[in-house]
Amino acid sequence: MFTGLVEAMGRIEAAVDEDGGKRFAVRWEGLDAPLAIGESVAVNGCCLSVVASGPERFELQAGPETLLRTNLGGRKPGDRVNLERSVRVGDRLGGHIVQGHVDATAALRERRTEGEWEFLAFDVDPAWTVLMVPKGSIAVDGVSLTLVDVGPADFSIMLIPHTLSVTTLGLLKPGDRVNIETDVLAKHVQKLLGQVR
Image 1 (cartoon, rainbow, N blue to C red):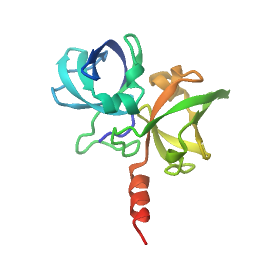
Image 2: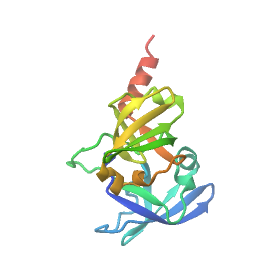
Image 3: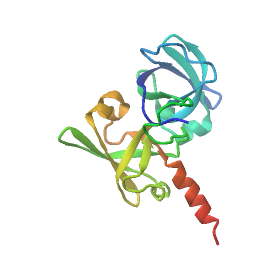
Image 4: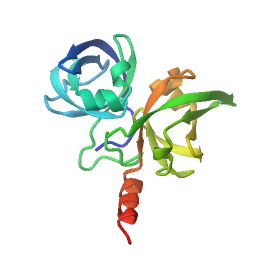
């Protein structure tokens, strides 16, 4: 489990095709100690397991399903990614409950400056907007955010200067794809209501 509070922007050093999947090497500058083998790390909001580790560098594998549902399949050496270690018992839950199970990708349609803030609007498959509500939570590339508006096939967010400077969201251009994870509570409610007769 994660909170959507990004700890660092990492950089992909290698992306190697592997039997339908990919193996990534990621640099995490300033990491205080090597990550443990098997440890869960959210990479652009996608929960992956560490398979090799060293000082300020680790490796992980992404299978075919992960590459199909997320933007990780298009990542190449030099690309920046958002990184967050999993929550430990007793940690503050400053964002919202993020599982690291990406639902789909969305495409940035519009970006505009409003004072110090940035307004971003995304197009997304309508199957996912039914799980979104204005002022509700969403994870975009692993960043816990509040939805501004939700349409039939789109949603919008506002970003403060801090988020723009410490996450990959500040680097987005129209047409770029992001990973989205809708609120897990909405998914459970939808399933329960769908079973009521």
